[in-house]
Length: 282
Image (spheres, rainbow, N blue to C red):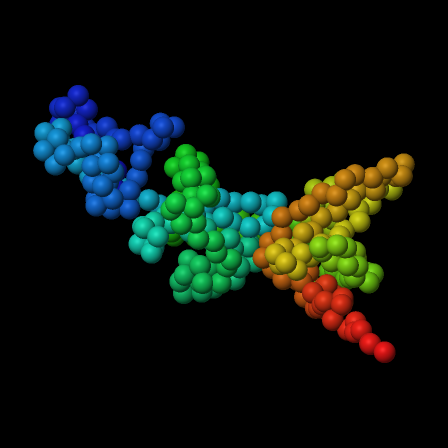
């Protein structure tokens, strides 16, 4: 990536100042050709560029890692200037279980990047500006694919997975009732055999309060929504509170839903109710 710079007050000893966007952030471009095209679009000729001492300064972006301990995941964000779109942000979303698994691999970051969920945000798409602003203005908890970052990620994963905040697994949940088809989604009640206070941040220990955990699966978008309602001892209850899932948790819940008949419910929802209806003429 490059930035467009010129000497402050036209004096080279002063260092460079850079072109800013409308929000006051330094603009970056995939390469010098893209930066030159931008300047020409602003009316600059080659002669004007030379006379003003304008230069294209290389800008090395570092990978940024954002911890989400509540959800047990890491958001790993970096910029890829070599995509077919002319530039894109790549967001890898490994869970802490994968981080701990990768600790034993020869190439820690390659293992994570090849196994985790990944999103590509191409330049020119609706989401690109938001990612661009986030990347340029919000420091990561750790930056750069370095040995120090690797050690910090492993330590954070180990601490979270051992401090009592249990992740949802196939071994600590059951689909407690039959699945229900509800308009555009399939609903299930989840029997939770894990510490809900540790996982959801509720405070039911030593009280008569409890939580009901539900899953909603939307076949058209393949979205899985999981959350809970808090039932108070006085009989009142909260609205449904959705939670963000680690990848391993999503897989565990889908596994249990399929065992309970998810695929059959999807087929029923997608079947044509009139396909078996015939008309007999006398």
